[in-house]
Length: 155
Image (cartoon, rainbow, N blue to C red; front, side):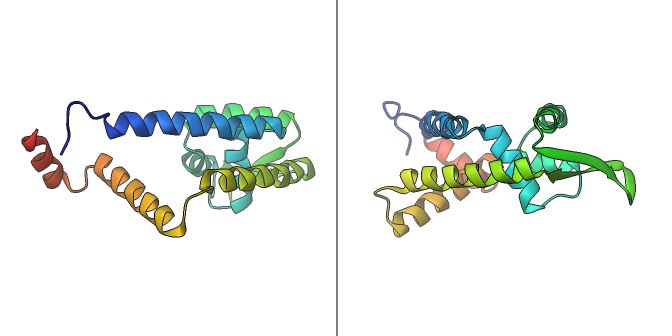
């Protein structure tokens, strides 16, 4: 039940996410990258996309924003883009040796940051946190709308 004196969970989550995101970005910057660069590098490295539109979705940005990041990363020698021979409308994105090296450096930073975040949190607690995150995402997506309407009616 929601109490008016209680801090709304959405606000608490948003503030926590902002603090964690800023700290992760700072750690990535200290290692020679940034959170957007890391997001692109890990997505390219995982090869979970077939073209730039899918890469943008994987990174969580709009196509124009991704293009800006890719242009900068290409200018910095971190990746190359070339037309897909099977479909000339699509670009294939690949890491250069410099991009590979930065990926490895930022991966170590991400691992260390994750270790810092997990400090003092047991496996059972971590699984509960993940389950709560899953439920929050589902609630935002409109799943279980009936339960949400019932909760709102009790307010």
